[in-house]
Image 1: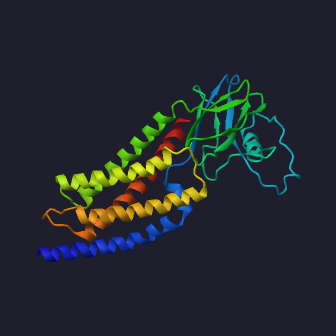
Image 2 (image 1 turned 180 degrees about the horizontal axis):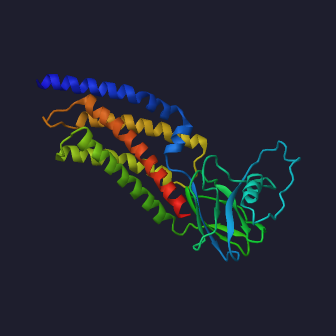
Image 3 (image 1 turned 90 degrees about the horizontal axis):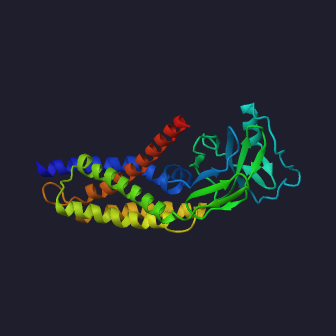
Length: 302
């Protein structure tokens, strides 16, 4: 009877892995798919000495491409502020000495209306080399100095009165540690729930220790690369991270296959390996869902 149950469990896991294989391959070979599900480079901008009354704020990104630059003319540094559609059109077509408006497709956070705190978050693939652009209530357009971000999550301050734009690195260690703790705790919670409630593993000392070690080691290296290195992700680095995470998934699965024990005290390599893959997939998609919910909540607040 026990053998029959194990055979049924093995067949279910094989079907599950076959179902998940296309998703795994898509994740492996599609940089775009990976980019949409992982943590994004961001800019948190604070404006000091802001203009009087309402204003709009956005980011500019630089392009070094030379095609058609000679035929382009700089946008006028004034616009009709009373017409919101005109402001949006102005920003979408903005050009000034090689600088374009940062306008990522299908997102709502590219240009923001002023708030009382004068703090603004650009959370979706914000450029690492950028300037801030501010449109005051009179339609005057002010462009800040350039900022070349060092941190993956950049905290910058613009002095509107002088145009100075500086990255704040005084709290970078704290921000990196908090980001690492957040990611590690989220992983432990999601993958722990999968371990106990989906795959029905008992919480023995051996299983708990294996779970803590596997996730602790892999999350340490991933988060050290993401947050403790002074770099922003380019496409090559993004591809390297995607490949590295696939290797980690497989490595975790093999590790679990040798060390996890079922309720009968014996190991089941295929079940444990399947747990490693499924837990990582659910953790990845769970993070994407939470980020999406956060965006919608922030959109309602703003």
